[in-house]
Image (tube, rainbow over all chains, first blue to last red; front, side, top):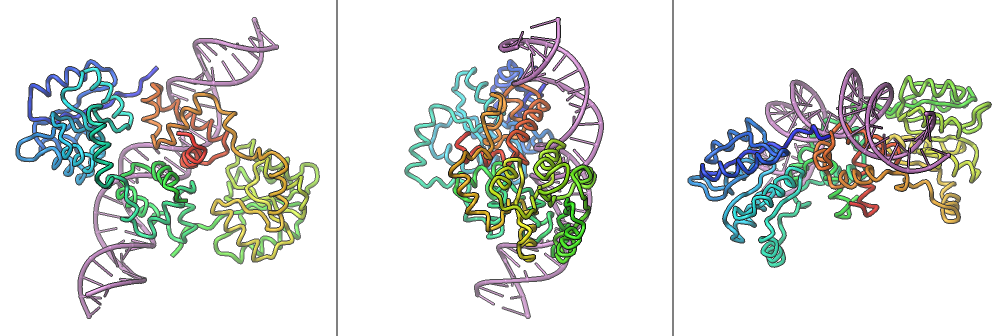
Length: 216
Length: 216
DNA sequence: ACCAAAATACCCCTTTATGAGTACCTCTTT
DNA sequence: AAAGAGGTACTCATAAAGGGGTATTTTGGT
């Protein structure tokens, strides 16, 4: 079984030796493969756009453009890859900033190799992975501060909220269009916009989110 | 606005005069169009498979094969159209039998024309439409008897339940495949089966149902 | 009158999802 | 041994969804 292709990974880190080590580690795992490397933000973004990896392992401490900025630039460039921040910093501000900027994971470089591989496998499956060491820290940050990383319904237009409820009702775009008396193409535009605003990846995620949020 | 195509309707009724009247009524409405007619079950099923209408208006009292049987045959033939039973019978058994057999609506022939059109428009949008007269009757039937019309999780295999939870987690088939270490094709097979068993029309409906059911 | 946001509609294209069919393998039950 | 259920893996096909872009119209506020 399993001829599913393995998850492709792009490494962005300014330390060649560390890249080499991580690459060797990763390639011990059949489910993971390093398809590109970069030593700075510019190269990294270029490589990300060219190779469209499943995952991007991103260092925070890089010269010129740091990891958070790189992350934002990747998002601006509409790179669809999941971005896992991989750094030595267990500083709360860094963690929170990375997650607020849309990181899909935050792993520390002092992890056990086997744990790192497991985390990457989980990340490739869509899970947000955070080093165990950071969970307590994160919980506190969320308690004290505003959550704010949650998808925010307030940024949505009335039409978008309306369409979310219909998606949560299970309706396909065609029926939403009929119901609202607009074309399917227009519905798609609204869906596209709301997916981006909510940082969600599909209408299924929208539906689940809406139901859990008590809409619909 | 609204160049969305109108909802197509197939009429199945053994009374030519009634078909004629209904057709004339329906064609007063821009959003609805009669694309085929049939005077018995066999013709009706044939027409349904050929024209794949959005809605099928189905009479219950027909010679040889009655409406309920016709409905079951339509389901067996994998006709995707929404089937609205349209009859004079306000008998509780008929209503319950029709809905248990998978009818998407149950309308009485003595409805006001304008109400009928409105009901058909709603049905085309995916709503289950029931004549107002029947709601009380239905409520009683549901209280006394078993609900049973609800999608039943007990008919699912363990693998299917597992996949439902993953769908409710927002995962696309590809990630589900990786997580379960099977091919995407196999995931699709499971999804296909579970959609049929649960009488749902898309993975979005599955996700919503699962979340509301407390799964995932 | 002007501006900006929202809504509409369309183009292009790629990726996902769904539906139907066949096939093979492994268990369990009869 | 035969039959059935469940799981896996294909094929081929169509439908739906998603992401990029441009452009027009509507609407509310200054």
